[in-house]
Amino acid sequence: FFESAEVDMWLDWSLMEFANPPTNLEKALDALEKHLDQRVFLVGQRFTLADVAASIPLYCFQQQGLVTSLGRATKRWLGTCLATEAASSFDFVKVPKTAAPAPAAAPAAAAPAGKAAKAPVQAAAEPPAPIAPTTMVDRYSSCVGGRTEIKRIVVAEDMGKSMVGQTVSLCGWVKTAREADKGKLYFIQLNDGSIPLDIQVVIDSSAKGFDSLKGQVGTGASLKCVGKIVESPGKNQAVELLVKEPGTEVVLFGGVDAKEYPLSKKGHSHEFLRSIAHLRPRSNLIGSVARVRAALAQATHEFFRSNGFLYVHTPLITAADCEGAGEMFQVTTMMMDAEKDGKPLPMVGGKFDYSKDFFQKPAFLTVSGQLSVENYCCSLSKVYTFGPTFRAENSHTSRHLAEFWMIEPELAFADIFDDMTLAEDYLKYCVKYAMVHNRADLEFFEDKIEKGLIKRLENLLAEPFARLTYTEAIKILQDESPKAGFQVPVEWGIDLGSEHERYLAEKVYKKPVILYNYPKDIKAFYMRLNEDNKTVAAMDVLAPAIGEVIGGSQREERLDVLDRRITEMGLEPKDYWWYRDLRRFGSVPHSGFGLGFERLIMLTTGIENIRDVIPYPRYPGHAEF
Image (cartoon, rainbow, N blue to C red):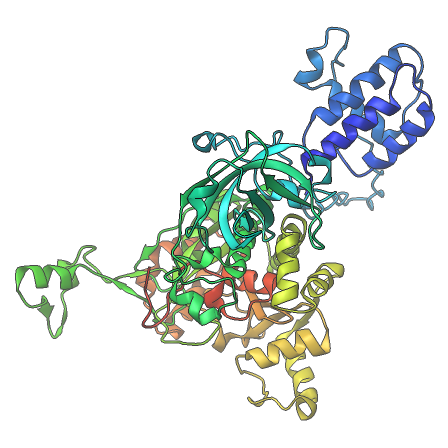
């Protein structure tokens, strides 16, 4: 996290190093060049006061002839700074009419006669660094007179020490509270949800509002505390908030009866937390899950946007079964209408008369947005959808939900190998995004959920994923079977189970693995049939500790083959007339994949039960909240 403390550090640095006249300008420029080597600005990803404080004096030194040459990174940074609107407000700054040219690319190797030179391949996108807010006070907190997020203090580079002496206003919920000095002091652990870490607040009896806390300030109570940041004598914290001096106060927003509040300061089982899903975000576990979930959703949109994909909203109600599995929730108003009118359900020939239903045909909640987003892929080239999907699968395992979220990109003019590259780039981007933006949450999971989590995630990022065909994987698993003792025997044609997938990723390759070219009989109708007529161009990404996390394929672009596959799966080609039109009118090779968002969160956090990584889990017999 890049906090305002880092901006303050650079303000002090500029004041000392760029004094007029400067004492050791060469040393200062060397330090600046090293810092800017891999950065656009001094702090974060945007122009801040730190850049102003350093760039304007440096510009003046140039004009005075004190600086005649600059390093590559410093020169680029200075040109960028001087081109900003802020710099142009200084009358003495002459803004360059054109930006400094980008470094020239290495010349491409000459192409053989008669052949076009191969264009350089675009590098994989990198997650941006966190952007530091420009002020300490939350812009949207005027209701409480302005508040500072706790994370701005406790995760600063110096853990808040540079803020000692400042008066701030903190708002949040009490994690623990205890009285001391015969009721003249309260020691409170306060958390506002911005970070898994709490801050200790010491409230003295002389503080305004102290008396309102008596009997009301147990775990779960909500407070506003205005006080001064002081150094803490405690072992695990650098600073704390002291509410004591004139001008400080404590405001009780909502008290709590400790006998009735279901979340105590002790730990709770995951099963119990699911029974109070409306309050479980206040637990350390679910709070951290929520922050990582939000970060991964943000990472998803940033990754696809930065790679030129368009976001498409696909329908939740559909008449098509994407997977051909038939495990779909039906959408109908017939039962409601029949119950309201006191009439039997409309029937024709012993079957429901759907012509009397709302959509005048059988309709369902979608199991996938893929078929719909393919339509846009075959016009806009690169698209993705990200939304809820539904499966009426009567499963009570820790890996299945009735309602979950899917990320499904589709890209035209791409084959199965392009698809695998996209999947690997996306997965690495998301994991790295969480490592950069949610380090404190991952450290919490490392401590409480999975020892070695961060090392596992670092290994995922460290090297390319392994790639092998399904047939090659079957041979490896058969050779390993005597040692592994699989519960399900391994033979060509089986749908690999979690034990097989995890063995490949955890024991054989010890990193993520991409399997491709699966038997056609265990895959969906829309996957491209290979020349052997036995396998399809399908791929799965298998990750340690999870198993399958991504499933994708090259889509079948040949109309005659698609029709045959639809019929083989027991489906009606006429129900997919619009999907077939894509093959009739300007068909192109195209590919895509689907990733269960909750599986991605499980991979990133180490949490083993999928019901704990979604706000309100839906599964057989449970649709609470």
